[in-house]
Length: 311
Ligand SMILES: [Zn+2]
Image 1: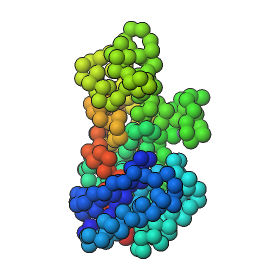
Image 2: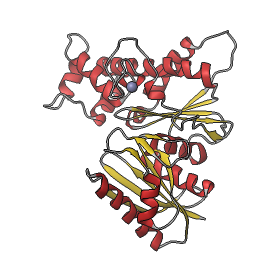
Image 3: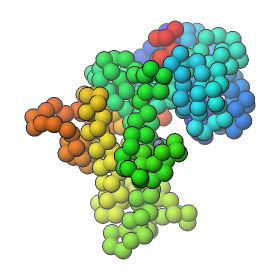
Image 4: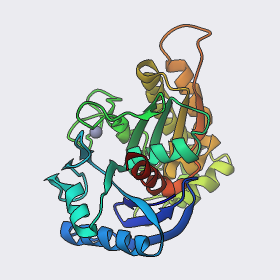
């Protein structure tokens, strides 16, 4: 059985026709329009176009933001001017058939759970370390939505009281310490100090950023500044996972997003920080850590599968 999944990202709308093994049969991609009406039209055009060439049973759309418990209303989107918009109905009117709506981080977590790094787990936490930090929780094989539909906002765990300001209006959120942006901030801070920052300084672009490939190369070369930057981010990630363990008791943490491209260089120090921050007793069981395997396709694969399941 085939279904369409569409993932609305900050820069691109990624769509695909997905089979029931999570394989993408056909893929589509357009630049995300800034105007909300043009954006909804672009999503509908992509869905209709993909569905016109395949026998598609369901259509799912994933977007960043708070979605209500009935999965109908976009209460608040962080990057698009959607406030209490009946988004599912808007897509259904444009496409002319039923649509499943889901938060993008939840969709990515579900995709990894069903077809990616989550295989063999039924209690999984996914953290997507991109520009920000997305979260998803799978409990006993079900996606945790919460009473208002907004569970799993793990990036907004308060990691440091009175810490860096977050886009959500709070301060000290995990997102400010364990994201791609946080890695850049730490790397710049290290580059600016004498001692171990030379490699990072040499890799800086004119605007001060350090490209991901350059960071990866420095880590491969055991550059002390780059290793320290990753260590700081991995420590925040691992310590937060200790907190999530106390609340959710997953058997697996799946780490995705651009920062996860660092692989074991990220996971090794994260595991150490995680085990050191676990509440409780010696001899307790610990969760596994794995890097996500579906990459940027996790969201569209996940929401296509959710659409099929929810009918
Ligand atoms: Zn926040």
